[in-house]
Length: 96
Image (tube, rainbow, N blue to C red; front, side, top):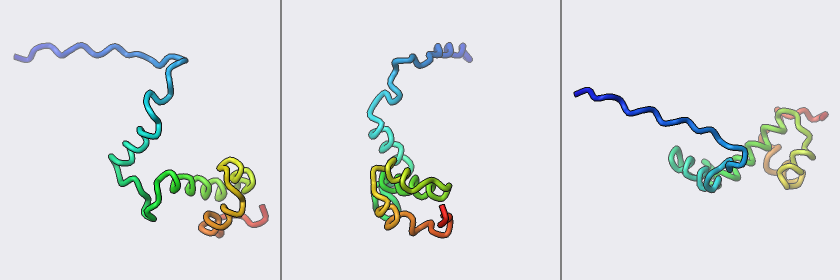
């Protein structure tokens, strides 16, 4: 009664004009977050804010120019200094 295994599906590869996200990338990301955790950080903030904060802190701790990071994140240097840089002041080279 062992029957034969079904044939393996034919592999298809993405084409140059295929969308990177076949659906809404926001919905895909939120579904992933909801499957693994809540949609909020431990500070009760939306994860998108938390991820942005993490990105800024990581870039600064790697030695990135604060003006470039501010421009990339569409925020001001003052806001980065007020909300992000305070968390990593011991890791950032003040002479840079």
